[in-house]
Length: 300
Image 1 (cartoon, rainbow, N blue to C red):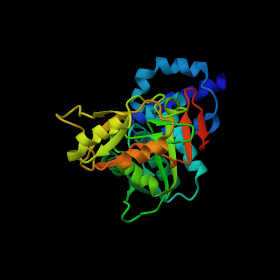
Image 2: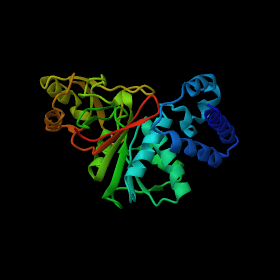
Image 3: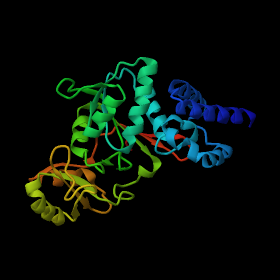
Image 4: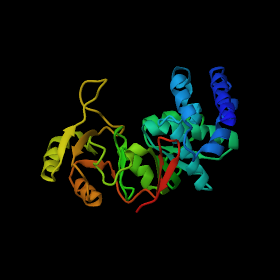
């Protein structure tokens, strides 16, 4: 317990250092803990301390894997697993959504500290901004049409590593990047891990469509057994518009037992640009668990 207390004190000191812009030292303290403890359960004492110090640590959660925030530390551990398991990564596809915020921050730290030579291909406006803001090398498919590894999150992942993506409306560019990668790797927390698609994700399959076709496309989706709904924007009047200028339809099909067949049927509808069903694409998935451990899965 004395050793644990020392590590807790070191982590709190690291938080103070982050507040005073000494990120390098804070990361070193965190990395040392992660190296020793990344597959061990979080001690109860640390869980209690996390609750007591939540106000202090909230601004620096992304720098403190010790406290295992699902939205930061566990995803950091997963990204470390990816970069450890996959060698010779030169061209990296960067996904979109909440996961990528933490992944890019962690990637940028490792690139700086380990002098990694990595070129990043974004899947959205958001991903492009994050790459630039974190000082990573930005490129595109025109210059690097072949990608070593694409890393992305997912809204839900089934037993075969088929995914539903597109909660953020970026599924078309995400799928383009993933399809041009030698390896497509998913990073998510355990809540996204399901036996069948539609088991936990209840918002439906995101489908990007050409604007003038959205009404007839919705009628055809209904004939396939889906319940389509045009996704409306929150901070603007009217519908969500993708980075490509398309509209997004969310279609609820309940439990999806054959995502390959459904994806084929949807993409055959004239006016559909792309679906959020990523079938037979992922080669590996890393799920961060609530106890701070990471579960690795391959397609069953």
